[in-house]
Length: 460
Image (cartoon, rainbow, N blue to C red):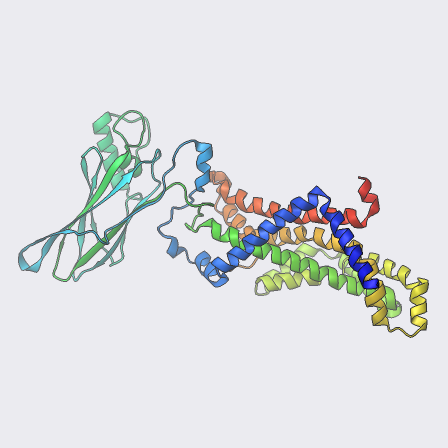
């Protein structure tokens, strides 16, 4: 009978919680974040995510600091995507020469239909050679003009040719543009010189471009090339200064933030509840020791101590979580719990149960804890955003787990590399938006729960 009564009371409380629109919105957001977390854990296992986040070399063919593709909505034009053209599967022209050598010629074509210039052009070579290998590089424009870019000598088999960083090529293209249209009223970069229309107005010449490589190969020599014309936008979340897709950090930041916030909130609340209950129930020396520890902890500077701990010890997410729990279990909430327990302890049915020989553990678990739990649960849910922001703040200060891709780490990287100064607002706004979304979901649910258990708040 008692069990069915409790079940009915729980159903009524749950029904009342769902009657608040704020709770429905909070639960909807929370379910979305939970689904996102499950999707992330299944599709991108944590070891792979950590390896991808810490290995910038694997992203060498991604654009640097590229904005997300949806940013085109605000620009009103089609921004360049990264174009990769490889020589694999393309037959090069080879003409036999004397002494077993052969003349090598390879042309790679691609279409460029965007309304802005690319930020960078790099040629990746894959070769094998017995002696020094020199390559002549030519640029073919849609209007049929061919430009000799430079002669490049390979320094290693996997050498790269950075066209965008070549000051000599930039000066050569500036002179070419000046010979075509006269003195330009804009700065001629390598990308502009290669992709612009020859007119006083700076415009992209759309059409079919080509890049030709010519060399003389010895017997047994091979040469492959891959041209990467980098874009201004990339994927759903863009890239950072190391060309890493931010979507990896944003996705994995979701389960990390939620699990960290929930673990810290639940463990801190439960341990504080147990300590406060012990203090109020047993009294005497135990009560005095717990109360003095609570008062000492209340005057200790929480954040400086946490910074000190994470500075001197190996930083990982578990050390941070343990430090936060230890610094929060002796909170002032223990005093409130103690007062409630002392009031409940004096109830007649408690005294009657003690007279019948009920143990302290039975009384605490069956009579005391159920009485003090209703106001504790909303407070526990409402404290989750604080711990989520705390983990992000520690990562922002460089004191978070250096291996895990988290929202705070993304914001730290953005701040360190001048994202706001350089106009890369997406780099900060995306993790900040997810932080706020996660915090708002728990806050809305906590407010609804508090209104359910506190009749005075229902009138507001």
